[in-house]
Image (cartoon, rainbow, N blue to C red; front, side, top):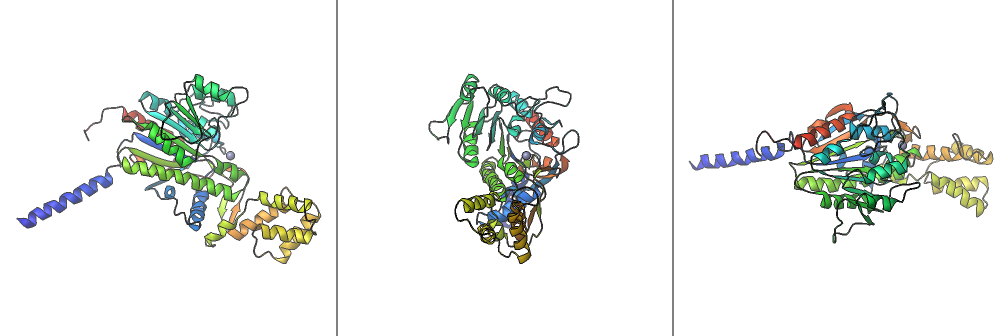
Length: 428
Ligand SMILES: [Zn+2]
């Protein structure tokens, strides 16, 4: 008898564990947080994790979420996308021309799932580390044929119904940003949001604090029983990758993971209702790992390539070194450890011939040596058509397994938002 009771007791514990562990799968989320690393390809993620670990900051949780898939990123012509066409795919579920936002190639407008979220009574937040009317955030609320139409996109933002904007600024040409937002009903907070008094919604948090802090504020402001959608973009991964600036690209990737940690804390509190998705709009820079076994600490020695020009400029106004001395200053300043005599002669020769910039110039040659030493390689200064890793955790995350077009991200999130307004088949 006693034995039986104990057995039943253990079985119910086991049953409970299984229920808790599987509860998030197959459920409809009502709190959705979507992270977009602008320009963040597979190797950005891998290398940023190595950098983070070498700095003692730990793994990148976003690389280890339970569900892992990848999104194809090409635009409607099957060419390499820009952030506008990709944002339209991820937010609206249609492929379009580069530069276009919220519009199909036939020039008709298409709504993002933000419109569905508002209809469902959800709150919506848009967070970025660059202009809030830049291509990626604008893909969620704007309809324009040019991503550069800053005033038009700002005017559309003010009427978008988005409850929370968090970012450094809105760009504008002629429009007064604050006036335009206030006319749209926005409470404007400049700088980090204090917990007391909390701003009222809708709110535009400009000159925001860190990405993680801003997401924290957004979660406090937007949490409600019906639901919310929040998009968080780390935008400088792209800008840095265009310039093959490794340290900046890595810190912007790590910064995104800091915000993912905030989202994971929220998921822990609401495991049955929260979905986290991390993806990218496209890869930038063609970043490759040539020697994965290099000491990860070596990645910390990679300097911003702009430093080469700074050393040259400083030396020219200051010390007036011989070409040999200048090259020594450069190789030491850039942390190059074992430069062969041959490479050194090439560098001196380039300097003497005044070949500083451009392909095959001194700056590029120093960059090549620096990346070679770190075991990495940038293959372009532009975007590439590489698939981007997409990881997910929590309720409904199973939709992000496998390989799919980036429009699938919009389709899946839209479906969840629409399902959330339908009465559930069974009580839970
Ligand atoms: Zn770009």
